[in-house]
Picture 1 (cartoon, rainbow, N blue to C red):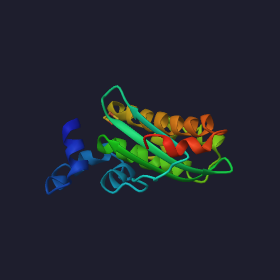
Picture 2: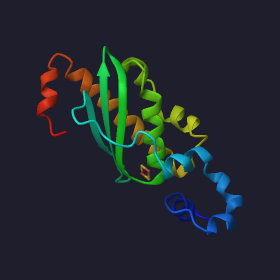
Picture 3: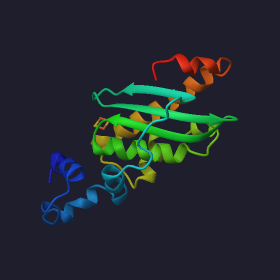
Length: 156
Ligand code: FES
């Protein structure tokens, strides 16, 4: 099974899944679960922190944060990316929700990959994309800290 097979299986698991079951361990159960039905996929209509990041591979991710008293109350993401990106975005949002903004800034690609049960080397950058999008959304919130009214006038 090559990389394309893994991706196809994540995007569209079918009868061939049994035939390649032996190779499925290359993709953790947590990655598969989140790629197929990603928790926290969505948006927040007037976010306190927002970012839209495009990675070197061309995939992109948006992050929306609702923040009160410097704590992330809600985190949502959307992506034009692969199944691994869906899994990474979903995990990053889950790790960020409930955290203070300073603790959420410490979430990194390694922690996301670990929580997912590992990522293939060819898709470690998907966790980088989720990390960067989360951090930029937090920075957006911090940048607008003294002028919260500005969030009503941004594009998102
Ligand atoms: Fe590029 Fe997933 S393949 S972020």
